[in-house]
Image 1: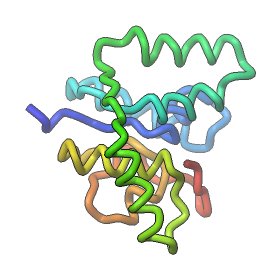
Image 2 (image 1 turned 180 degrees about the vertical axis):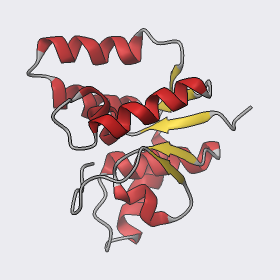
Image 3 (image 1 turned 30 degrees about the horizontal axis):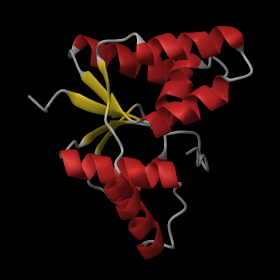
Length: 146
């Protein structure tokens, strides 16, 4: 049942919707494969906020991502509780050598809590941890999008 759940990270969806992104074609191909596999998409409102902020100056793109997430029955928003946020802060304090954001830390906490191991992301942070199958390819060298 959980095998087809994939966590959507902001970096992946930005590449899907922004034709100017270097990884746009690869992200679109990965998305088509996820649809073919009947994947269910999991994300948080924190991730959605990053995506929406990225496209906030373009009305057509902003409307598209609203539709992508809020009108798509394949997308499930996992609630982020206070305990998840506290665990993310603890993670950030423990791993001072890492550069991931609070949003990424919350995502990691959610992934671990739900035992989801597949992540659609171009952000190397998920790959560096070595505990997730990261779909969507790698971002450009030196890319540290959150």
